[in-house]
Image (cartoon, rainbow, N blue to C red; front, top):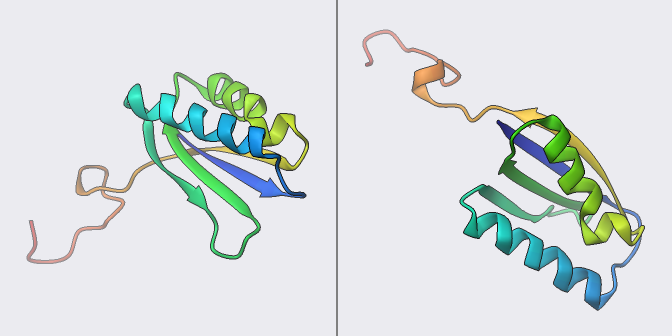
Length: 97
């Protein structure tokens, strides 16, 4: 299953927390589970899109994030479905395949 993890920023993380956060994202990427990640343009936090076994695993990952453990961010986990023609999220237009 795919999940969106919203990291809401409440403070400035330490250099060690930034390093640990990035290392965890790299591990997700190596495992082929990271879809996308990055800071939000308004500076309010960041977003991680990734695949996890279930909601409990996604929540455990979010709570273990170095930013969350350090108290500079809070996390909100929401299930997410990638839109594609196969699930009709992109819609079907008359005359198109």
